[in-house]
Image (cartoon, rainbow, N blue to C red; front, top):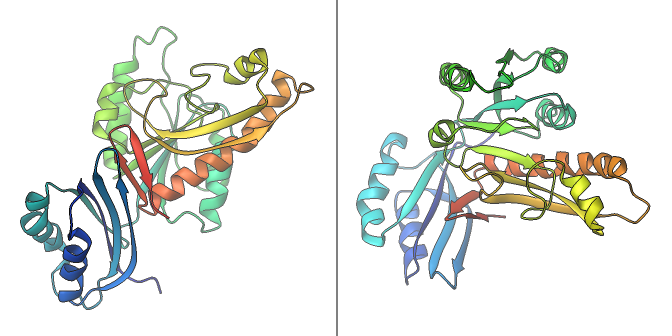
Length: 288
C-alpha cells in the first residue's frame, strides 16, 4: 500500500541552516523523511529544496502543516513554498484538436499505471478524437471555436466552468491547436503543460519541422513547457532531440518528431504529477 506522505517544495534566499531547520521540524514531529533533494543557484543565490516524509506518525495534523511552516519559517527565511500530499491525486484535463499521438500515449501510460492521476475529462475543439476517449471510457467535450474567434471568450468561459465542476488541478495541451487566453493561464499558473514540436527557443510558432528542413539543421527536438501569456516562452520542463540527415524531408521529420513529442510530453507530465517540478522566474528546477 502506498504511504501517505507530505511533499514540500520551497525556494528562498540561500543562507546557512535551512536544511537543518526543515529536517529538524519534520523529525521533531516524528516524521520519517523518505526523500530529500536540494540545489543552490549560484548566480541568484537562491536555495531550492524538495522533501517528502511519511505522515503515519506525524504529530501535526495534515491540515495544519502549511500554517506551521508559514509561521515558523516562511516569513523568517523569505520562503516561497508549496505543500502537497500523496493521497491527493492530481486531476488532469487533456485538451486536444485532431492529432491523436500524444493523447494515445498519455492514456496508454495512465491505463498502465505509469501516471498516478485522475482524468475527469478530455476537451477538444473538434469531434475527431471522440473515438479515442470512448476507447478508454473517458468523457469527451467539444467546444467549437469560430474561424474568426468571435466566440472564443464564450467558449473559454464554458471550458473554465467545466474544469471547475470536475475539480481539475492541471491541464495538458496534447497538440491542442488553439491559443490559451490570459484568463485561463492566470487561473492555472504553472499548471498548463504544452508540447511544442521544436527544440525551443528555435522554431517557435507554426510548422517548426518545415522551418528546420529549410534551415538544414542536423537535429530536431521537442519541448514541453508551462504555458504563459508569451507564446511558446514559458518555463521549460523537458526537452529531447534526435539526429536527422540530408535525406529527411519535412514529412519524415514530422513522423520522427511525433515519436519524440510523445516521450517528452509524458516525461513532463509525470514530473508534474510526482510533484518534482519547481518553477522559478521563467525556469524550472526538476528534482531527481
